[in-house]
Length: 302
Image 1 (cartoon, rainbow, N blue to C red):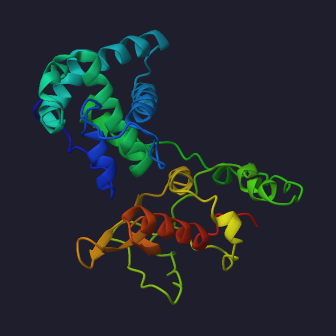
Image 2 (cartoon, helix red, strand yellow; image 1 turned 45 degrees about the vertical axis):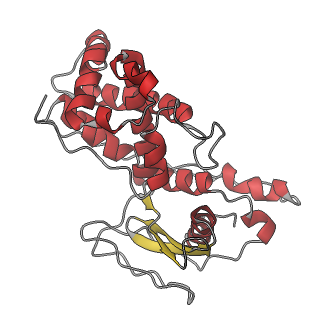
Image 3 (cartoon, one colour; image 1 turned 90 degrees about the horizontal axis):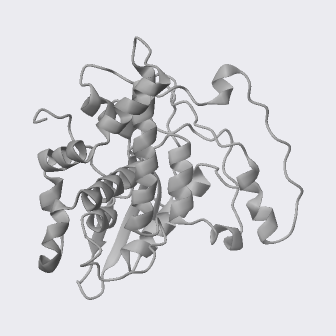
């Protein structure tokens, strides 16, 4: 168990990482964070994601396992002993901030399982499913290389665009974006990708080597009404990016005196900047950057 694959890091969100590593007994607030809610929701999401990637790993093994063998192996992999060993080997138990009076939580298998699932849930909304699949598969069998199937209907030639929803006024018109089929867009090759023309208000940075940028919209994005833009939340941008197979990061910089800071946050997809925002709080700047990226990627209604 000591020779484990590298632990994936939660991309570009210090506040989320801090929340994951903070037990509810010492959490300052009990309300919902706009982006993801709370760690209880992340744990519920993470448990389903872990079950999915474990099942898909067993499904991919050769020779084929029977359905009964897959169920048995999945229970073995998800045992309390295995999960606690993973947490200990990665040093995650030591990172959990907890009230001294609740130190026994570290020896509670159910609490540690929930902590592990919380980490996976956070990874899913920030890094995407493929990162988790590769990580968990290497935990199960370091010699096995498991890749997710191409989930894009267009790749198989079966995609039929849906007819546009009827036009309506106000909020009903904005809901039209939800009627479009959800699919992962295949990433373009390095040779065929083109550079995105950034707005004059900010500088765009090239993606890191080996990571293709998101595809360029086929036409310049149309400006959206301010009332519609107010409905674009961080959660919506992050969810849409994850569904389309992109990694979202939010590099942030702070300037000015500590009592009156100015935050500048960039929204990057696969390492390339597609939006930025400024504000008196990091949250405000982050939301502005996410909305700009949403518009620049053409993810709004057409």
